[in-house]
Image (tube, rainbow, N blue to C red):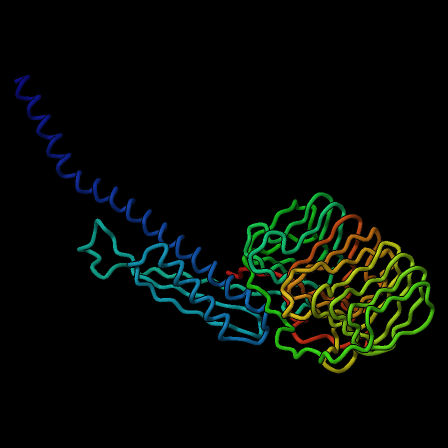
Length: 414
């Protein structure tokens, strides 16, 4: 009887396990499928979030567009889905709201369980949604570094500063160090945005830079250039001169030397095949003047003790542009501001193929109503403080189209 009882007990356990096993297996399988379902949903939510943010970034370039943010968001979502699961066959939609500078992205898919395919032959509904908006779209643009790939397209070193608390600073470089702020240097701006990455500590920025920003288009690329006629002056150099100079074509450049005190009469100064240099303790004043640099050795140099106050033209082809480098010159020059008394640079500095470099141990452009710099590269060093005002109403010098309309910050709403 003892042996028989044991056999009966073993049989009962076996029978019970046989009855319970499917339930246990079903429970384990359900847990596995639930885990897969939520993992898939989490992945799709991340894809939707990134796509919405990508679309909303476009409002930094155009505050009225609907089609571009939608197209960018759709492309980003589809690229994310292809990377995650090319066979998912999800439905994607994007809707832009220019009034709110927002983009809404929806992704819908069918989740198909691997263990219960028969019970859920049509799969399970799975949908996610994300909405992002660009807050503050329409801010002024103070700096655009145009180089699309270089390291240090925008570079601040030592204790250099950019101070533009109401405007934006952009690096178009996709390099992981396209924007670099080193040592004790600092950018103070409403927005700092790079198409790639940045290098610098938290204390180097008033606001953490945004990465993967869409590149800013060159706002002056399509503007017709000033005409360059025959030479009015050849290798013009004045030493210890007090008086006025007239606009015209300065072949071989224009050098103001010694202890000169020069007033530049309004108009366009074509600096051809030579530099525009203000040396030693010379002073230069000019209202409604524009400088067009063309040809070999045509660049800018303000020496350490020089004193300069200049404002751009109010009309004509150079309206709003103080310094303009001919885009046909691809030699990669350096336009240097080292003067300690460069109080006023009102207008736009446009150097599509060169570097704007400042290293004066003093503020630069602090008395300007506004200053914008669009250059291949921007480099600051030493103790210089580049002050970027945007008080457009305080001057008759117009703001070129495209200098306004940067962004504030991008936020996910849900």
